[in-house]
Image (cartoon, rainbow over all chains, first blue to last red):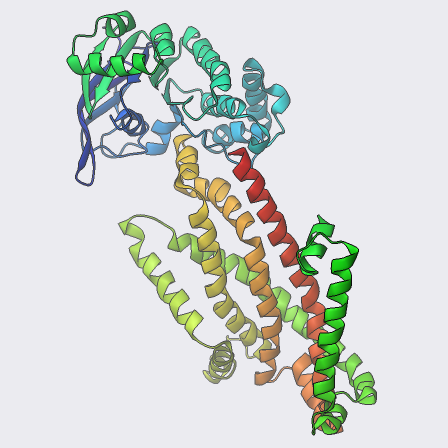
Length: 250
Length: 279
C-alpha cells in the first residue's frame, strides 16, 4: 500500500481495572474498505471502536488515522472525533431535540457552520435516507429503525472520513433491521471507510471486504468473508461460527 | 386526565356519584368535628377575638397586602439569582478529572455548610454583620443583604437539585455529543444541562415555594414586608388578626405555585411512563 491506511492500530491494549479487554490489537484498514468485527459479547468489539473514537483512552499502543497518530500526546481530541463518526447500539439520539436539531448540532457547534447551511446539508442527508419528512419530529415519535437511521445521518453530517458502527442493529426489532442495513449498504457502496461490529453474520458476509474475529481481546483470525465463514482456520473461530449457525443466525 | 386526578383525590375509585357522596360526607363530618372541638375549647372566645377579628382583618388586610409587594420583589430577584448561581455550583461540582478537584471540593464545602446554617442565622449574620464592617463601597441596605443571604442558602439546595438532574442524564448522551467533536463544555451546555433542567423543574418549584415563605424572615433585620407590617398593625391594635391576614396573603400566593408543581409532576410522570413504553 502506497497511500497511508485510513486506520492503523498497533499493539493496542486496554484494561478496565484488572480486566484486560484488548490484549494487543493490530489492524490496518485501507481507504474505502469495509471491515466487520465479529465475536462473542465481551470479546472487545465495542471497546475497540470506542478506543478508535477516543471515548476510551488506550493503555498502550498506537492508533493512526490517515497517517496521523491520534493517540499521541497533545492531539486535539475534539478535532480527531470530528473526522470519525460513531453510531451506537442504543442510538443515543438527543431526546430534547428534533431530528433536524440532532443532525445539525455537530456541524453547527463543532464545525462552526451557520444554522442555515447546516440545515441545508442536514436536510439533504435526511432526504437521501428517506427521513426528510421526519425533520421536526422528536426521537420518541420515531420507530427504532428510524431512530438508528437518524443516528447514522447525525454522524454522517460531520462528513467523517471513517465511520464506526457498534452493533447498530442489536437493539432493533427484527422487522426493523433491514432498513438500517440498507442504509449501511448504501454507505459502503458510496465508498465510506467503515469498521462495523456486528452480530449479523450474513450481512457481514455480504458487505465486508474483510472479516475479523475477536476472541477475549485478541484478533484471532482475519480474512475475506468467504474464507472466514466457509473455512475458518482457527478452532475458536470454528466453534464460534458453529454456535452462530446453531442459533440460526447465519 | 383532569377527571382522573379528581377521582384520586376523592378516594381513588372511579369518580362516580357514590364515591363523591362519601367523600363529601366524610369531609363534612371531619371538619364539623374539628370545628366543634376548636370552638368549644375553653380559650376559644379569646382566641377568636385576638386572631379572627373581622374589623381588624378588614383594616389591616390592604396594608399587609401592599407590604407583600416587597416580598414578591425579594422573591423574584432572589429566584433569578439562585437559578443562575446554583447551576454554576452544580456544573462545577460535576466537572470530572483531578484538575478540577479544588473546585469540586469548594462546591461540596459550600453546599454542606450553607445547607447546615439556618436561614434566619444567615440573614442575621449578613444583615447585621456585613454593614457593620463599615466598608464604604459595600451596600448597607438590609434588603440587599437579605437577598444575598437567601441566595446563598437556597443556592445550596437548588444546586443539589440541579446536580441530581445532571447525574440522571445517562453518560451515553455525553458520549454521543463528545463523539461528534463537541467539547466538554458544549456537551454540557447543549445536551446534558437542557435535559437535566427539564427533569428538575418540579422539585425546583417546590424549593421556590419554600423561598417565597422565607422572604418573611427578612422582617427580622428591619425592612417592612408582609410579616413586619402585620407586626406593626398588631402593635397598633393590640390584636393578632393582622398575622392571620399575613398568613392568608402568603397562602393565596403559594397555592397556585403548589398546584403548578403538582401539575408538572403529574405531566413528567406521564411522559416518563410513555417514554418507558416506547423504549
